[in-house]
Every structure is written in structure tokens, then in C-alpha cells.
Image 1: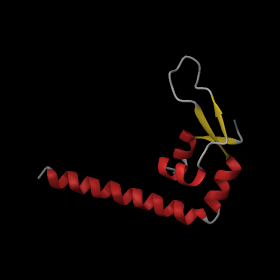
Image 2: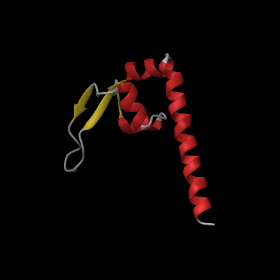
Image 3: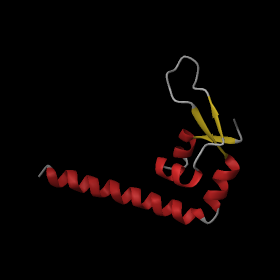
Image 4: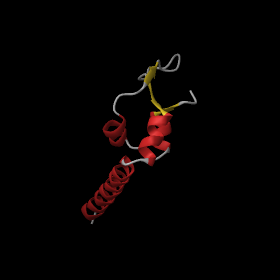
Length: 85
């Protein structure tokens, strides 16, 4: 669907699960999983909504969440490094 993004496509654009839940909420559409696969339904988010959030006021919030995630990863890596010494 060219007018919707999947969660995987949003992640490719830099979105995290937390960002999706906090800023996009419920999906605009849901389609069944690919045939023969025991997966969750595919959640679809309207491109217009995604672009509006990426370009609008929520952009700074998205950047802060992304920065926070990077800091948390760095802190975890330092903690693991300290534990192995």
C-alpha cells in the first residue's frame, strides 16, 4: 500500500516502537499477516500522518526520544563493559 507505512518501514525511517505508540497510536488500517505465516496482523499508518509528525511540532519530541534511546544504549554498553572488567 503506497499510501501507508508498515511498522517495519517506520523503523527504517528512524521510528522506535515507543515513538510509534506515543505519537501515532492506533494504526489507520490493519491487514492480515502474509498467507501461511503465524504472525501478527500488519499495522498500517497513513503516510500523511507520519509526514505531518515528522515535519511538524512533534519533530522535536521524536528527536528527543531518538536521542534518549541512543543515550540508553550507550549507558547499557558502558555498564556491560564495566561488568566484564
